[in-house]
Amino acid sequence: MNAFLPAAFVLGIAGSAHCIGMCGPIALAVPRTGPGRGARWAAALLLNGGRLATYVLLGAAVGAFGWGLRIAHLQQGVSVAAGVLLLTVLLVPRVFRRWDPTGRIALGIGRSRGILARNLRRTAPEALFLTGALNGLLPCGLVYMALIAAAAAGSVTGGMGFMALFALGTWPALIAVRLGGNLLGPRFRTLLRRASPVMVSFMAVLLILRGLGLGIPFVSPTTPAFPAQATPCHPSTSAMDASGTWDALR
Image (cartoon, rainbow, N blue to C red):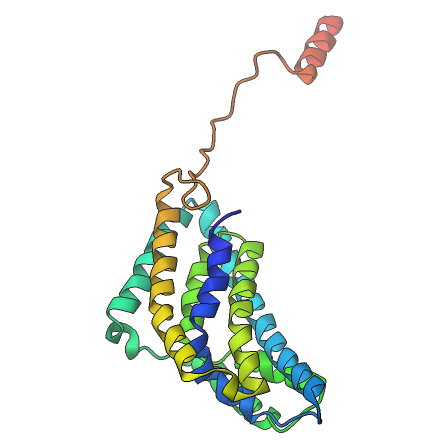
C-alpha cells in the first residue's frame, strides 16, 4: 500500500485540535434534532458527512489539476514544491498569515457564511447535511494544506481518496464535540495540538520524497519512463496484405 493515503488519515487526526477550534462551535450551535443518544449520533454523522462530501469534491478538483500536471510531466516538481511550501508555512507562518482570499473566492465564502448562519436553525436531515457541506467551504489553513497534498496525488480518484481519508481523520474529535464537549479532556487536546506540526512536517517530507523518485518502495517510487516507440521487427499484417495486393495488380 502506498504510504501517501494513510498519511492523509493521520494528518486529519493530528489536525483535530485545530478542527475543534474552527468547526467545533458550528457543531455545538446546531440545535438538537430530538431526545436520546441516537438523535445526537444521527446529527453528528449528517454534519460530518456533509463536510466530507465537500472535501471529496474539492479533492476531485485539485486531483484533476494534479492529473494535468502529471500529463505535462510536472507532477514530481509540484510534489517537491508542495512539500517545501508546507514546511515554509510551518516554520515561517507569518509569511502567509496576512493572506486572505479576494475577488470571487471571497464573495463565495461570504455567501456560504450567510447561508450557513441562516441554516443553523434548521434540524431536518437535509439541512444538517447542507450545514456540514457549507462548513467545509469555510477558510481553513489545515484544509488548504491537505488540498495541496491531494493535488500531488496526480489523479481525480487519488485526490478524492486523500481528502476523504483526511476528513475521516477529523471525525472522532468533532463527533465527540457534538455528543458532549467533556468527552475530550484538556490533556488530549494539548496532545493533538503538539502532534499537528509533527504530522504536517511528516506530510511535507513525504511529498518531497515522492517528488524526488528515489526508488523507495511505498514512499518514493521511481516514475516509470516513457519508452520510445519501438520499430516492429516484422512487417504488419496490413503491410503484408497491401504488398500482396500490389503484387497481384502488377
